[in-house]
Image (tube, rainbow, N blue to C red):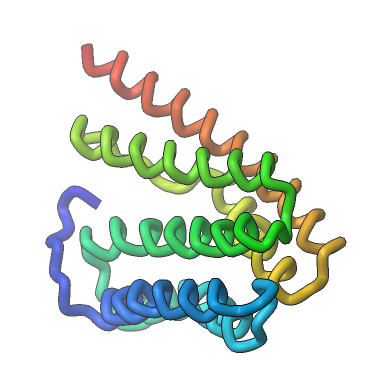
Length: 181
């Protein structure tokens, strides 16, 4: 990632800009509903989430990889997950203790990745992080869609993978920093 230019004007980055711009729209619609289960908000959440695969596909198809894209894509993913969890918290759609853990993990990962960048560390997604993305994004989606039993299953699976991946990132980062000394 360090050798790639920032290059803000690529097709994958444009998709991420649109995804980022749609998150406040999602929040306004969802938080304006009476119960957090507005169909338009649910569809918009799904579109923002699934378009993550579109930007990756377009990057591979066009060869348009950039440092900015590598930074922007996970940021948008985290903002979407936190936004979905905020809606679930507001309408009590998922257990608040679990939402607090998920949001805490996401905020920790934002801070840790910023620190890693400042130290010149290259941190790529690990297997637990990759496996945790769909369930942790699926939890607020299914909660807002009214499929609570599936939302809970996704939440707990996503939390487990998320916490495992956070521990793996910390371990990897600490090893890298020690190796440089």
